[in-house]
Length: 243
Image (cartoon, rainbow, N blue to C red; front, side, top):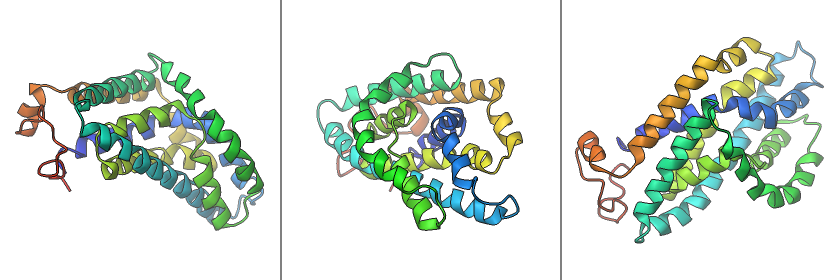
């Protein structure tokens, strides 16, 4: 678990500070979810927003579990070291994106547009949302919207070589996106403004970049974790010690 903890923290940071990108993708939907509900019914607004975001986060975790199975197969092959290097590079790229220094991650959104064309009609039929089950289902479908940040996080999570760990990392990432999207849906501009501040985003980006450097295979992990992680760690005898 000690080895997974910094990765979970990093996933939370990615979600929290990546919320600005999420606003561009889901911000309009947050308003649409509550536009038909009178302002005095704040409790009902919150319940619908929570249900929608729960569905969305669960879809991230499901995707993490599925792609994590593929990552497990690679991690138990000679390509395991390459997978770890790719994970580190993705993490550094995400840190650069969050800090506003590089936006190349958005190019990977084209990967999911074909799938989204089939899902979008079903999602559209659920609106307007007037019940919790519809909000939950809409979130579960909307979680598959093409998003460079989500896709990159998915690939990074899969590189851990464990389907359960991958699902947990995507769950943590999804939970991290909650504050911004909930604040938007509830018109809490103050919190949104704080998370969008340049200094906050740069600090978060630097933290994620440092986690990316830590992810690179090398003796530094042996020093930090107290054991040799430069050898394969996903064999049945040792790969699941943190579970």
